[in-house]
Amino acid sequence: MKFRVSEDVEAPVGPTWTGFTDFASVEEDARGRGAEIARVGDWREARLGASWRGMVAVRGKTRPIEAKITVFAPGETLTVESRIGGMDSTYEVTFVPLSQDVTRVSVMLELRATTLSARLLLQTMKIARRRVMQRLEGAVVRQAQAVERTWRARSGA
Image 1 (cartoon, rainbow, N blue to C red):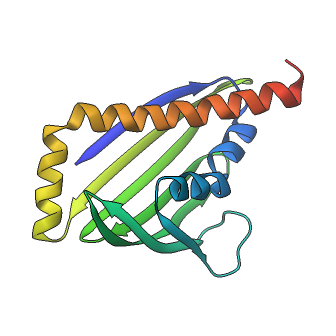
Image 2: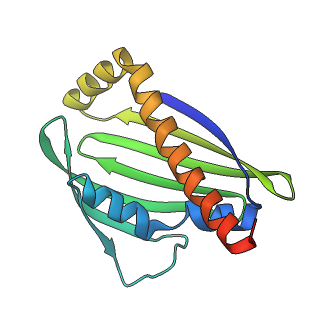
């Protein structure tokens, strides 16, 4: 099952990349939603091979999560592969400069079930596809707005 979202961010590609790869804020947001996430190894900046482990509640049940950055091309693309319980996911973010001050961020989330319970969860998500898309779009828009606010504050615009 695939979900695709695009958002035009009013900031150059460099600051946009920096904002979307600020994993400290992503981790903080996940913890705020009840996840227990920890970095594997002692890394401070995002890089190829950086990974996380933890536990997250999905549909009322706590499941293990593992995630790893598998593609890392600064200013171009980022891919995070993860496994949550019996479901594999690929989260791919692509950055395309439309002009000097506008960057299009395209997000693709692909979910694949590897167990029967994960297949049932995916079936439920297919029924609620519109709501899942709204949540994904909302997350991307919030992140884009944060990047724009930071860019405006730094550039004095």
